[in-house]
Amino acid sequence: MKKVMLSLVIIASIGFTACKNQTENNTETSHSIEQVNEITATETTFGVRGNCGMCKKTIEKAANSVEGVISANWNVDLKKIEVAYEASKTDEMAIHNAIAASGYDTEKAAGSETAYNELPSCCQYDHEMQMSLELPLKNSEDNNPHE
Image (tube, rainbow, N blue to C red; front, side):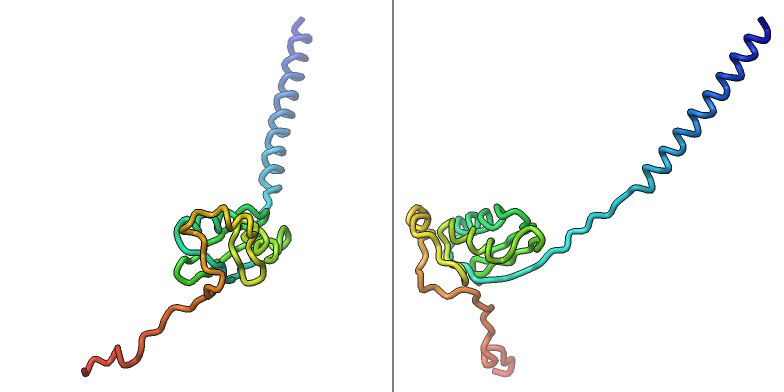
């Protein structure tokens, strides 16, 4: 009987030791499998016609609806949008087309007339409006401290 008990204790000890080593090996493996996923963003800026904060919301929503777009920010005053996107998933023209489909003209795509006509009246912009404006520079005469 003693031999049977001793055999069971030895077998149990070997089993526990083997399980412990297996757990340590799995932990080491899981730490070594870490992957770094970096998204390389392509950035672009282009003109988009629009008037107000409601336009901004619609334009940015249209741009962000394109798969691969990371961020979009339309400047109401300068009439231009800054977009960051994954070039492996989309291209600049797809973003132009999405914005145009929502009713807004871009530098490369005319806005959908149907969508334009459904925009609120404050968002129905002048089709001759300038896009991609630059910040106005102050006249050097205005900055003369000696006057």
